[in-house]
Amino acid sequence: MAEYRARQLQFAAMRFRLRAGCVLILAAILFFARLGARALWSSEFRWAEIAREMLVTHNYFWPTINGRVYYDKPLGSYWLVIFSTPFTGGLNEAATRLPSAIAGLLAVLLLMILVRRFYDARTAILAGVILATSFSFVFFSRDASADVETITGELAALLLFNHNEERGGGLWVVGLWLIMAATSLTKGLLGFALPLLVIGAYSCLRDGWAQLFREILHGSVADRLRKLIARNRWFFNWYTVAGVAVGGFVYYLPFEISARMMGTQKGLAMVYRENVVRFFHPFDHRGPIYLYVYVIFGLMAPWSALLPAALVETHSLRRADAEPARADRFALVYFWATFIFFTLSGSRRSYYILPILPAAAILVARTLAYPGELRSIFARRLLAVGYAIVAFAAIAAIVMLIPAWAILPSPYDAFPPLPARPAFIAFWIVSVAAVIYTIRRFSPYRVAISMGAIAYLVMAYIYIFAMPAAEAYRGEKPFGYAVLNKIGGSTDHLVLFKTQGPLFYLNPPNPLPEFEDKQDLQDAIAKGDAKWMIVRRRDMPKLDTPTTIELSEQSYPWETDYNFRNKVVLGRVGN
Image (cartoon, rainbow, N blue to C red; front, side):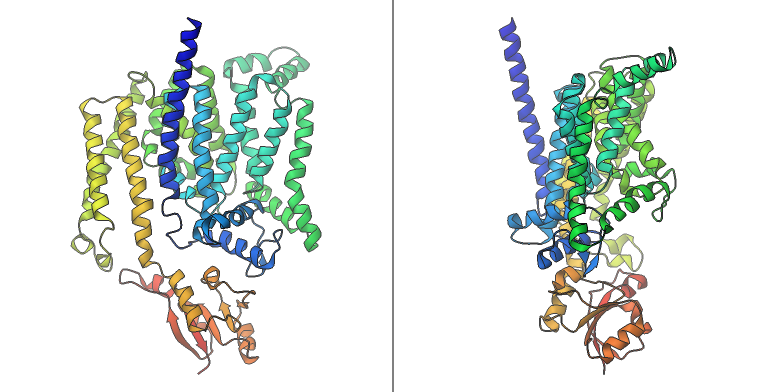
């Protein structure tokens, strides 16, 4: 009997590894396919340009953009970009995004392992699918940033804790602090704050609120403290002292090297400003306190349509004291602790709450993987409504094949036709078939199958077909290369006025003169230092300097006057 049981467990483990491997292969396609097909956009420019200037100056401890220090993020994420360059043929769009893609794939793997330890293989696989096909997770796994690295680091810390939860102290605690330190070197102190918050809250609440209150509301103060410490043995032990020392040293070392090389503590000063000051006394990104209540539905789309049902169902299971109790409490603590933390922060921006996605994926997976009907009637209704919204959107998507000139007003009637139409039609047919499959016999399991197919196909179309095709209508990269060709490849007499333009694509060996004041610009022109200038079209009238426009970033008929005036141009200074 024991031998039979062992074989069954071995077979289950093999089956889980096979299914998890399939999820990872499909996720890798989403995260890596055509990764470098799109030019840099928005904040991606920072990661690319800082890495480029580090390579040019050979100073890897001083982040600069056009020669000016930019220490808003720690050095780790820029180093990861540099480490990626041998695998992509140099510093290019793929290199800047590769760390995020790898981190995204690791996050999916870590989440599946973690959920399997709490629940079962089906829930684990489904959680991995949900995370890997959530809109913003795919987006940031294909984006040059440090957000997905933060999620991956937090999941690694939570998995290490879960593996050693019953042991109390041990060398693993030192490893926990090292993981948090390494994570914090990519984006900031969230690498410490989020794991400590989730682990601490779960340790207190893993047996439920009632048990916690019984322990902390009765007995002497010393007895209450002993019980609270007992719940947090992972923290209250001598290994934590060593962990804090080692983790603190690893985190502090790059800043200290930077300070000794450059003679300033700018790095640590920015850590304080970007983490502590931003949390308590925000200086920008002051979104409303309810921002994340609705933002999460966009970040987790399309699975967010099922999130209300998942929250209602999981909370109802807790009131019924159903099993697995600790697993459900972990998922709820993970979700609500993260939500409350970012809501209480004074600085709020839509994607800041991205670390909540793994917790939300666990809750939705737990609900869909439940055998049979959901226990909560309200949750069943919410599930039906949520799926109906996704099904309707999937079926109605066929209208996107209608030409813009037939349905949109001017100037939007000039929009180009839908890209990759054969792929879109094929994906739409499969999505409709998935909807029919679920409607024929509605159940959480069939909802999971249908949603998985729809979500994957939608993400594949958007990121592998549509967005690369849209590159034909983005002008910054071609403009940058055209500028280099026009000025003969040398940037010696090129200056910037109120914009950094396509700086990365210009690849200057030295920082370009950058002006915000027209008098300073005129002084440079008078000295003969400026013969060419990159400026936004809207700022041209402010120059009071004879300038001939030689090149302009491409414009398109559907763009508004604001878009047109925001384009950058290359001007030849003088008559």
